[in-house]
Image 1: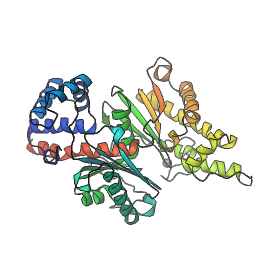
Image 2: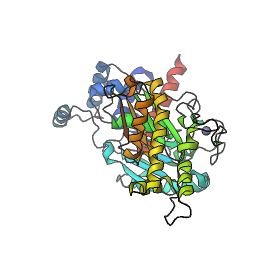
Image 3: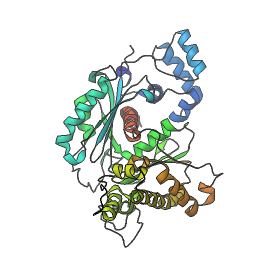
Amino acid sequence: MLQLSDRLGPARGTRAINHKHVLISIMIKGDTQANLARRTGLAQSTVSNIVGELQTAGVLPNDKAEQARAVRRGTVRLPPTRNVAVGVHLGFVRATVVARRVDRPISETHSEHVASGANRGMSEVIPVLKQAIREAVGRTSLGLEDVVSLGVAVPRMVDPRTGRFASPILPPWSEGDDPSRDLGAWLGVPGALDNDANLGALAEQTYATDGHAEIVVYIKGSTGIGAGLVISNTPIRGRGMAGEIGHLVFDPNGAVCRCGGRGCLETVIGANALVRQARDALSGSAVDVPHSLASLIEKAQAGDVVCERIMRDAGRVLGQALAQLCNLLNPDLIVVGGTLGAAQGMVLDPCQESLERFALRGAVGPHSGFTLKSSSMNQLSEAQGALLLGLTSLRRSDDTQEQGRD
Ligand SMILES: [Zn+2]
């Protein structure tokens, strides 16, 4: 089997850097040459030359039968390869690990869920994550020594200039915590860290659309509410705080938020706020009170009128907030993910109604080209985005050397 580790180290010179860029893009997703050109930003003729050279070098299938099959499929794919990419989504109370052989499509990703999150503290959660990575990688039939990249998604702001948490660092994280550094050192690969909503947006844009959506917004609705923005294949991070839609002020006289603001969207439709509403309405009744957003959604879907009302109103409020975003950015696609996405039409239908009521008709109306949908990635968007980030960040060492030569 092919082994790519030697080709993934720091590249010198434009030609080597472009070769590695195309190779990593194929590891992220086997694709047509036209799409590879669009995703890498390279000219189609450059991609075509590189694909030819990679075939000659045996990195891409070079036997005639396999090439003919690839031409018929219209896609460039790796032959059987002995390398695995890993992504970790580390939430407050749970975590998900995904592992995928880089020659396999996203449908052949192996995932592992653990009921431990960052609120246990780093020293307790890191060993749990190591075990989950071992199991997920094991199911690819390869070993930890075959892992080439690692990305970690966290529900926190990450400064893209440093790759570390942006200040202020709110609990349960503290100064110096970096799960991507600790797990990367254990695996012997460079680790990369980013905000989970950013990575959800990146995964949805890469895997769940045909790649032609110019502006994609991913809403991660769980304990917090975050938005990831991808414009022309580029995540918009600002200095770490882009897309913090959960802290847009929705009710200036509302409850104080954990960010220090008052009446943020998160204090209205964050998981804690929604569960609190159910608890207040149902306490003292014979009905079991939902203890989490997931159980609130389950009860709503089972027909509980109180829980259903709470979820539908949350969809309405989300739509009001997204209407502002639609007028500002005019996205092609908004994907609602996180636990909130599991509510599907119960949240999306009232959300769409609010959008049509509060946003410009040309931005969200029937003939606007706009789509609102729930994630189709089975709550793995953030972890898949983390895997993608790990692969992409293998190019960081190249860019440094390019800049160093200027
Ligand atoms: Zn806030």
